[in-house]
Image (cartoon, rainbow, N blue to C red; front, side):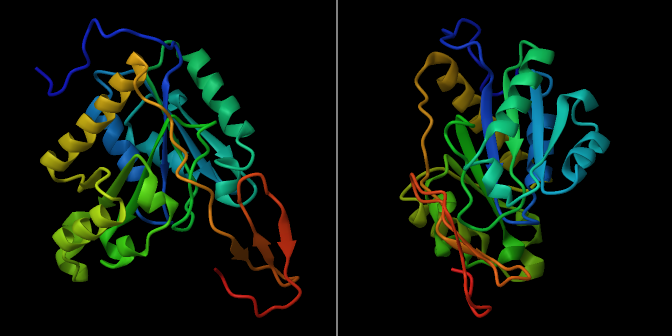
Amino acid sequence: MPENPLPETAPTTTARPLRLGVAGPVGVGKSSLIATVCRALATELEIGVITNDIYTDEDARFLRSAGVLEPERIRAVETGACPHTAIRDDVTANLLAAEDLAADFAPLDLVVIESGGDNLTATFSPALVDAQIFVLDVAGGGDVARKGGPGIGRADLLVVNKTDLAPHVGVDVERMVADASAAREGRAVIALSRTDESSVAALRAWVLDVLAAYRSGAHVAQDPGPMAPHFHADEDGGVLHSHADGDHAHSHADDHDVVAR
């Protein structure tokens, strides 16, 4: 018997699949985490995946080559702009991709949407996803969880990834998880390695619990909060990009000496 199976008679209040967002900086292992979720649940759930990259479909190709799902169930969105724009400011492309995927493979249980690699403040709009995972990895440094931000602090789940690398990068995983738990005021944290069966089981159980709550109508999508203003350099000096609620304006810096905030 699989652990934490979904109740066969669980009441269903929505026919739409659960949309689960996965965000985090470049290189933390978002695609690998999604592959792990697919391997752990593909025999129990009908799953689709949407990846986001600025100019390529590289993450989608990685997942297809990994053989975790039928290739047609993995779709790519090329955002052509800041990765967070397509998951927070204008989610149209991802919404359309999610709806097309759900229609083509109905009935789906779960659609996982991977953000392009972004900074520590990247969050999904609740208009796009029902729940979201924010991913860090030990190679980014043991202190990164203490730095906070809406993704670290208020995503539905924080994953400290690649824990098997900790001895090689001098990181105390227990301390990093404790720091993360403190930053999140007790919200869920999982220390994950794809080679550690117990951590994979914990991730699998979390996804199933959220799915069960979503199907019963008990889960309510939360907004971790807007991204902090941040700077994008370009040949004209750069753009100070704000994602405050109700304010999607871009203010252009006059100088070349503006630093990232």
